[in-house]
Amino acid sequence: MLAIAHDILMAEGFGRLTVEAVAARAGVSKPTIYRHWANAQELAMAALIEAFPSPGDTPPTEALEAHLARIIATFATTRGRQVAIALAAADSESELSRAFRTHVILRSREAGRAILMRGIAQGRIAAPHDMEATLDMIYGAVFFRLLLRHQPLDPTLAGHLVGLVRLICPPIPQDRTSASVSRLLPEPP
Image 1 (tube, helix red, strand yellow):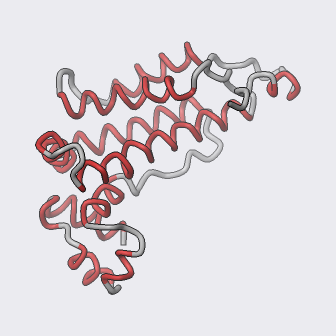
Image 2 (image 1 turned 30 degrees about the horizontal axis):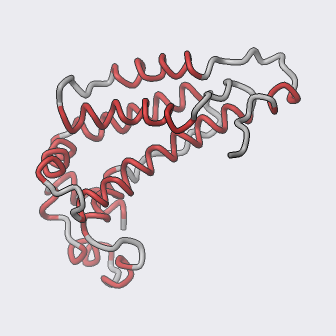
Image 3 (image 1 turned 135 degrees about the vertical axis):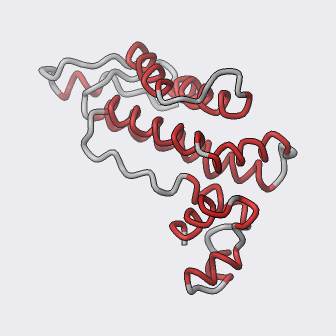
């Protein structure tokens, strides 16, 4: 369903992506779609970033840069810019705005958190002092540029942000023991 929604979104645009169109092309009922997404806006936002693969065993900073590059590339497309324009015109509590927060911003942050936590757990990078502020710095910059367009949303941004992450979460030499890694994990709240 997400692949079909993504195809419709990219080929025909945001306005043509409907639950009915996805159901017909996917050969499923509308209630099947509504079990996963509350409306066409949620489906569109989920489809926009559905194709992001898992980082596997890629080093954390490389995985994070690839993840950010995919987000940037998605929103640098004509359809991505159309979504940004629609968001800029939407009420902050509209279905579109809520879907964007849930399926794009929060999902992207959770993917970034998972990448960083995997690197911390593997002893490859140090834990940041404040994970939430670190994630805000990373994703806030991307979405700020997307929505305000004060600077270009170009592929170099991913590398610049990862450079900042390397300052906050420096690499750990790989000869450290796992005991020293456990000291780097954040304390529970």
